[in-house]
Image (cartoon, rainbow, N blue to C red; front, side, top):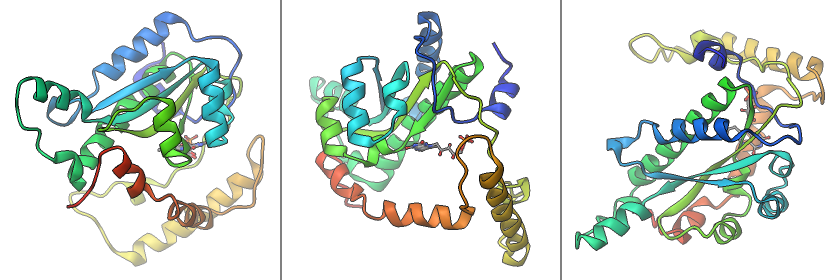
Length: 250
Ligand SMILES: Cc1cc2nc3c(=O)[nH]c(=O)nc-3n(C[C@H](O)[C@H](O)[C@H](O)COP(=O)(O)O)c2cc1C
């Protein structure tokens, strides 16, 4: 097992996997890491669907267009979940507040599910396994995916995670320098200080994209991210949230 420091510093998304299944004891450790995720108030407002059934993976691949789902050993769907607390509250005759219909309710569920996904990423990476988060598992076909995975009201797919034995080791992707990411004591919103750092990072990503191992592109960082934002504006996530019982009002 790699040290935590090596695991976090060397992690990268792995999209190609060997046919080999992940060992049961490795999956046990990943499940335990997921269970021990810090969550808001220890409310554990998340659940994970761990998918190994190849037919379900193929259907998810068809819905999302993400090949990794077909070839990975396990595909885990991380969900925000207010169903569990609602079931217990009902049994105890307690009134369930409409928390999941508030913006903070959505954020709490999304944060808990995201942290659980990161627990899985860290545990899997420390075991030498490869992972790739799949956001299209939330955005591509939310209603069809909710049906396929039998998600009850109060459960909402936040992000998928493909896990497998790595068949590639792509170059590490350059990340923003510390001065752009970490502020000391308060946000330093000096755009004249930020701009040269942002421009240098934009150039660094362009160079990386034209020289990296495997598929090359001529994207810079800014255009690439803005085109993603444009595409994401069409996702109609509020409709998807509402159909899972997250009728966000305030
Ligand atoms: C929330 C989230 C959603 C993502 N969705 C996808 C996806 O749908 N398909 C994909 O190939 N990669 C996806 N990724 C992987 C990112 O593209 C990747 O993390 C990013 O390019 C940085 O590369 P690195 O992970 O190798 O450092 C996603 C990552 C995150 C955190």
